[in-house]
Every structure is written in C-alpha cells, then in structure tokens.
Length: 115
Length: 114
Image 1 (cartoon, each protein chain N blue to C red):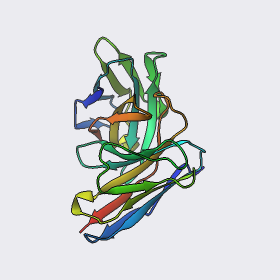
Image 2 (image 1 turned 90 degrees about the vertical axis):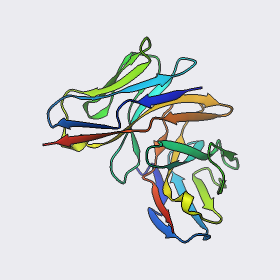
Image 3 (image 1 turned 30 degrees about the horizontal axis):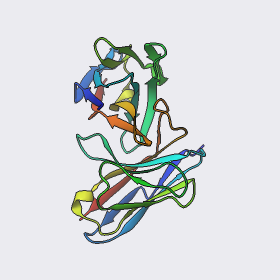
Image 4 (image 1 turned 180 degrees about the vertical axis):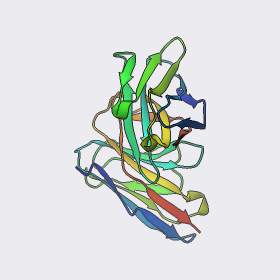
C-alpha cells in the first residue's frame, strides 16, 4: 500500500524568503511522486515529478524537490517566495492498482505569503 | 490549448434532484478519472475509464454513475443527489498506463446539495 503525509497543514512565509513544504511517503516499491499546486477556484496544476531519474527535480516557477529514499521524503522548496505562490500544494504518490493508475494524495499544505 | 474542460463550474441542487457533470479533453488521452475533493481529505477517486466504452469503480463510487461514449468525453451522473455529495468534483485525464505519467486536471465543478 502507498501513502503520503504532508507534515504541515499551513505554512506562512514573507515575500522573498525561502519556502519549504514537507512530504513523507510510504511505498512498497520505487515510487513515482508528484507535486501539484491548486490556486483558489482552480484545478490542480503539475509543478514537478520524480520518476527515478535525478533525485533533485526542478519544476515550474522556480520550485524544486529532492527525493531522499533513506528518509522517504520528497520536500518541495523555493529559494524566494512570491505573492503569487500563495496556494494549496499537494504531494502525490502514483502507483498501479489492478488496471489503472492510482494517485494517493496528501491532505494538502496551504502556503500563505505576506508582503 | 483547452486541455480538460468541465461544465458546469457551479451548481446548486435540492436533495433528490439529478444532474450530469460533463468533462471534455482535447489531448486524445485514453484514461479519464473523476475525483471529489473535500476539506482535509485530498482527492478521492470516484470512477475511472481506461478507454472509450469502458468504465470502472474507484474508491468512493456509491451514488454516482459514469459513461464514456466518446473518447474525449467522460460524464458523471448523480441520480438522486444527497447533501453528503456536496463537494468539488474534478475530472482528470492521462496519456498512458504508466505510473510515471501525470494526470491533467480540469478547473472543477463546485456542487452544493441543499
């Protein structure tokens, strides 16, 4: 079975400071992992994905994530937050379940960015 | 470049009414999915389809039906709406049957059942 735990329900940062959103996963085999972002009243947009190539994955809008197998973590970071980064972020593990791709979503982390 | 389009965007229903949510994708994807999103619970899979004319149950299928008569469209039906079905519904599609392929999401339908 696969599972995802997002360690913070809310993260508050000031504009221009670093962002860290934490995600731990559990998987019985080498996982595929995604980060999605959801802005208010919008759908989920793919930020980046890990698929067993490089452990440091770069995504859109300056975000990146590092896959650490020993820690079963896939934390999302950005060096400098922008007001437009305020949104909800979901860590997702992808698996295969008897004929279809099963995505297991974390419960989300809401990022608040203050001026 | 529309991607995944959901209609309607908002709807209010009374208990017992029926309705159909429409999802259309223009990426020629084989796989399509319906999810519901509830506060603090992430997204949960309702039904999915691996191709035209096929559908299957996901994690929370009770109270919903689906149809995939055309490859680009995936319909979600509520036959007799209940307040517990108040939620945000998302449709998604993907191109391949591999775990490393991301799913592409629509903007959602916000449904309230009174």
